[in-house]
Amino acid sequence: MLLWQFLARYIKEQGIEILFGVASFQNSDPRVHALPLAYLQAHYLADDDIRPSALVQEPINYATQAELQAKQALQQMPALIKAYLRLGGKVGEGIYVDHAFNTTDVCMVLKTEDLLTRSKLFYPEGAPFD
Image (tube, rainbow, N blue to C red; front, top):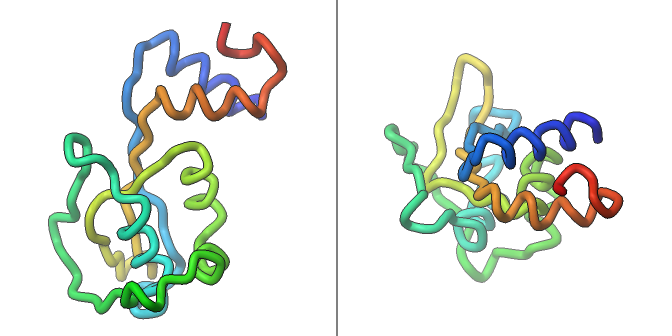
């Protein structure tokens, strides 16, 4: 919690508007992650004005709309990605398959106004946002 408090204070003091970075699914075969990847693309795609796109698009067959079941998709999603989603995070378009690290990566994007608003729920009144 101290790390998150420090991060929130730093974001506010520096006027940072957007955080972004890579979050990974373990396994470099994107077919293994078809359901949660499709769920992310269907429900958590970043706004057009801040949406990054993978430069190297891996051809994958996402799950169909009929197959998108939130509970199952979320169960298959890494904890870090779920944490970002709870804080208002969105994903970029596409994925990157990193064979060297055996991961399937998505770009997470988080508007700091969403982070600061949502994370107030986790802290006592007045800390670290005032």
